[in-house]
Image (cartoon, rainbow, N blue to C red):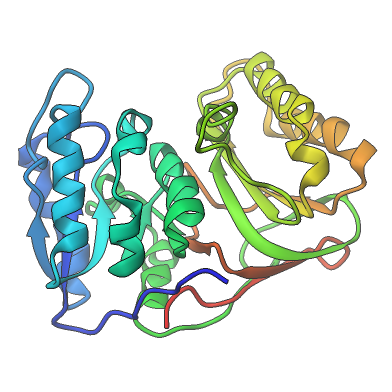
Length: 303
């Protein structure tokens, strides 16, 4: 069982880091407004405002910033400012034991998927797949997306059904297991490494943005050949946006083609990922997927 971090309270201090791509400083105040509106105090990491081409500072700067936030007893949660690229570059140098000994909320998605996979496996903690702070400016985050931050203050079971958004059953059945996953591209990039995603008996979330049908096909085939598809208990298909040579329905048909031979319960249409609303969920907790009724239930992610 994964370690659940302690819930937040108003007045708590949380850290904001740029562990992947940089963000221009002029946009920062409105990006922090959401956390402040929740009654939280914000401590900025030293990487915020740094830039090294497409990265927020050097690998050493980003690694040291993360370690400082993990070891700072004042920090109750860590929120990633922006995605992009760079998580994998420091994964092999992270002090995972330090995070196990100082479990705290870790929040983000997209490139942060690499951290989610590593933290769940090597730090044994629950993490949160939710909107990057770069998406939280005025009129950029829906009320539903904003409400999902409340799970960090008051533990509640998430029930995602068609009362939230339309869903489609690709493969019927029921599955139960720990939920894991995230960005398809980043999950495939873990294969063959120490940080290879573990799917055995798990419900796997998959989402992505800006990929071609050919690339999605290639990545699913890589997961098939590495036996990650057959080992999983079931699949939650999040949003796929900016598909440059196909439609969402064609993406779903491709998933059905790959997953049907394994008979794993699969439901598509979840607004989780590069979309609005972007429903935040904990990863590393027990979940139940009822593909017949099109319902996903997820246990709370905080204590």
